[in-house]
Length: 251
Image: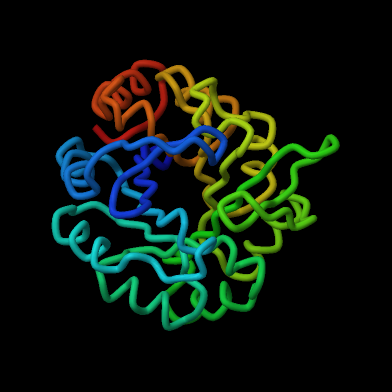
């Protein structure tokens, strides 16, 4: 059995880590570098760096900050936000990314998924899917959750897998920042319908929520921000709790 992963996420805007609620009401969550160093020392399984305003502002990811983080962490680093072309992805890898995350660009130019998978391997290509429940179904949104696409989340998840994505980062916009638990229904729907690992995102507020993401949502990894950024829990605590509940984790 593969060990389940715990992944803290650095949502970055204007040179700082921020955290919002349902992609709005952003508040400061500390220094990018200090948070990254902390999670490296905490033995997080991976780290995600998302430049959350890059696509909205039609610019590239803040690569200098990525480089600084990559020099301080020795765990896999996923970088996303503003990666629109093969050249953008190449720059992210050159600045220390182990994986790149595509969201808006994946919807606008799906062939980019295939091109990157063929060049760098599927394991290096993550497709982030931001979803919201609309009229009884889960719809995909882009541009930091501001642009509805009309795409059905399950159909899109299956599509990106066929195009070569090696992993899906599934974020519930309804749950994001609420600390009320993951959207287990959508998580289970996607996780059990695709052949690649799915990372749960949006809503983690306590250790039980992490357990539910694995036990009920069938996720392969759980991403969290608020509960770790503000030191409500440590990653060590989270892993010990999960191990006690019978979830395989790296301790």
